[in-house]
Amino acid sequence: MNKQQKNYYKYRFLEILPGLSIWFTFIFAILLSIISPLHGIYFIIIFDVYFVLRILYMMIFLIISWSKYRQANRVDWWNFLQNTYGKKWEEYYHIIFLPTAGEPFEVVDGTFDNLAYKTKYNKQKMIVVLAGEERFREQFYSVAKQIENKYANIFHKVIVTLHPSNLKGELAGKGSNLYHAGYEVKKYVDSQNFDYKKIIVSTFDIDTISHPDYFAYLTHKFISHKNPYHASFQPMAFYHNNVWESDIITRLVANSTTFWLLTDLARPERLFTFSSHSMSWQALTEIGFWQNNIVTEDSRIFLQCLIHYDGDYEVVPMHIPVSMNTVHVGNIHRSLISQYKQMRRWAYGVEHFPYMVWRFSRNKKIPLSRKWIYVWNQTEGVYTWATAPIIIFFMGYLPLWIAEKQNMTTVLTQNTPLMLENLMRLGMVGMVMIAFMSVIILPPLPLNRRKTVFTLPFKYLMMLLQWIIFPITMILFGSIPAIDAQTRLMLGKYLGFWVTEKKKV
Image (cartoon, rainbow, N blue to C red; front, side, top):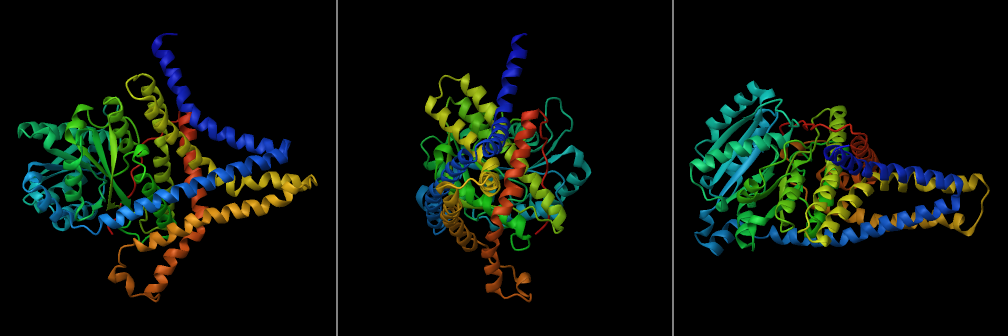
């Protein structure tokens, strides 16, 4: 066996480990419950205690992020930027990448309209890149032409790129589209003799609606950072564009994602880039742009930089939001299928585990403590994502049921149901807090939605009460797609990039 074959099997082993661990956990819990119900009960209690403590621990960081979000939104960052830095901010240009794959003109136009007319920033300092796919060539060029006609004179430049199909070594998806667009934009940047260190890059989903002060706040963060060329900047991710039109399932899953990410914003040492984010052009060109053969390029770009700069790279939290669509497209059946596939794609971030372990083991300059933090956080995160809801809500009662069938009466078996119930009540404290926060940050109800049989207070009450079904969504659109994603990686049935359907709000 040559070295290349050995490396292949070593890497495949790393790909197998996450999926193997979750299936081992399920099988172990079932067998232990059958063979020794008492030990099975101990296992479930320990697991539940750990999960509840984890929830309470996360609530602390949620409160921290929430407080910083409230503070950041009280500031007029556009005025702050001009008053604090004088003319210095004018030295910087922003490049905004908007990859698209067949989305209709109305969706693309909504994002451009927000950048052009609702963003408080000098538009002549903004270069907007509309990156299309060759497989949608005719439709894309039709959309691009309308966009250029409407916005070309507003921004410094609107650049249109077309990513060729079926390039060798690529996985068709957002990452490969951005990879191609990055090199195309580099040609323009070089032709204009721009200073790489004076360019800030933002990568947005095509439906991203940024906060009016996003670019002012980002520029402040960039200028004030001690080394902005070794940093990415991660905003808060809301899914509010169509939240009032969405069905209860897609809305609840989207809100859950928002608050999960909010807890991470308070812990920069474990923060990855996700979805829409920003970074320096200098760093982006030095690492060779986005990886073009993976599904989760949005978080991989951080790892590429972390490894390239020998651990001297970080993600800086931005407590200001960008908003995207939920997956709701009007038809409940299509929306639920889309929701499942979106969560499976996000869960496929487990592909970072073998990448990290493999690259970290070959880079001796990255401090061991940083390697351990990122590997542990990634591993523990995807593991509990897949296992915790099923063990807590289903398998947790298996050893009790078997003990009852075997007429096994002990103090432990009698008190465990009450103990588990109290643990769940303790865990519900965090859910109640999230439920109230989710209502507070809702955008105003659109006027066309107010003229219904339901009163405004009733609509907000329903937004609060929807969290009652959270345990169900946590299993159907949390655990199961995560198990699906990790099992696919384990079996070598690699997931392709699935494009979430977008609909005009």
